[in-house]
Image 1 (spheres, one colour):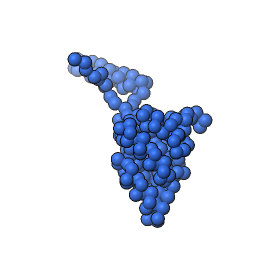
Image 2: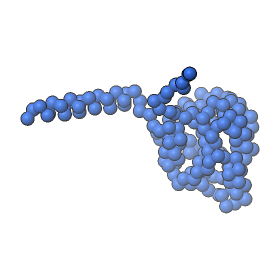
Image 3: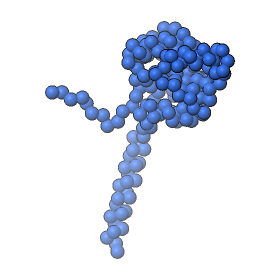
Image 4: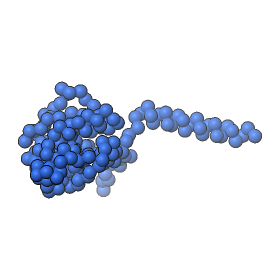
Length: 182
């Protein structure tokens, strides 16, 4: 009998798809913040998209088919705020690829705008129809925290882990030394 390898922790492979200019602005704010270890779509066509790590410089993009993007992700998050900017056909294409690959497809709307006009209402209908989950938050910090949770939480760097262990060892030594000194 074989057993599955055990992981000490899990980190989902996240692909963020900005929805128009508002989505790209949100990604820039997240990159300036503390969001790490996600890939973003920088340019999208109907069947292919350019992607890069959120902290890679512009020009480091690679082009992949939408199907390959879906196959290489655990979750795809569509991100935006101005609903008339939502590219409905691309959302449908991404959703089809995600379903074909068993990828969770989520939408995060930050301080959503223009949902009451005709274009915004149509975009909202597309998002509700195509997505597995749709979340609306008031500010980009909440969206970053939500994406971090979906990703599996923040990871400490090797240096942070070593510093935490060293601090714990020092505290333990001081505690045991202090007990015998009375």
